[in-house]
Image 1 (tube, rainbow, N blue to C red):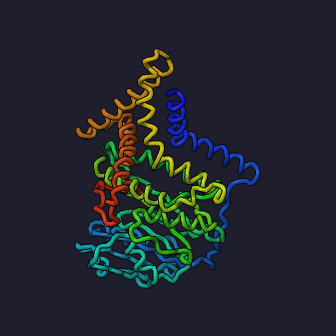
Image 2 (cartoon, rainbow, N blue to C red):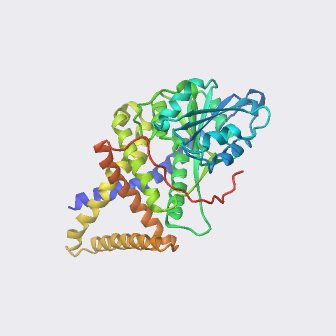
Image 3 (cartoon, rainbow, N blue to C red):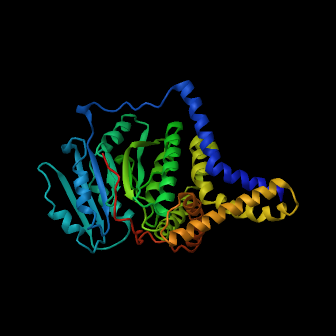
Length: 402
């Protein structure tokens, strides 16, 4: 039992803290011998053309703001082709796009299909119309900063770069909810790990809120792929290219309206993550893919497989070990009980719309791991559709996008 306890403890510690420590140390060593990662970038006259793809489904409340946001990019307007694709939108999203008063010189195209088949089907449908060397993807309900395209494009000066992931930021309301506190903390930590992953070698998967790739490297993915952004960019990395992370290019998204809404999203992502792992089995071969496999297993695979299981095992095994009257095991059990008590309090406070971040973060942590179990059930049953009801978001977005 002691062996199982310490093995579970190691898996949990390594997944959430240890990998970050290892990354930090490896990066320090790399900087010592090779210096900081440098991005050369293009001269102004050599800036490449890009296609900026906006995916939307029933976004009539957001679409005018999204178009205005896109038109504010600090990048030569003649070198941007805007392409908005709507998949099954039944509201006024297509109409608002068509009737928007675009400035002269703006290249904006709408591809609307009344049939709803999911985001990946919508993207695949329009890729044949993309003629630029770089394609950038974003969602209609996010706001992208003004300099994003310049910062993303700069990485493509390096021929080894096959894709670039932007940063996802979660805006906080004035009155913090359990979810905005937990989701915001999670994404700040995730962003740090992605930045270090990128500097060490490559990001392992991009978030769909903002990412890009060399258009020539795009390849259609299976139509039932749930998290296509993650799968697409990892397939590019498996070809020998690297995926860079650019935190100066970011998309701001409001937090989910409630933890329940966020849970729906997390379950879908977990089901998609397990699906991706089953389809990327070769990437587990560290002898073939080396450091990419190490990053993939450490940052992604453990979170969607062994670690949620280890959390249950360590608690159950800790009980009989604590009954052996050993101070260490008693302290560990009390620590676990205290943590889950805080999570329970966070749950009750969320129901009463009260704010205490110290309780919200343990609650969000438990929700994240619970979603893996629910995602596993959906994956096994094959019941997670690529067509899904999006989570409700908070109405206000107070973060300034510059």
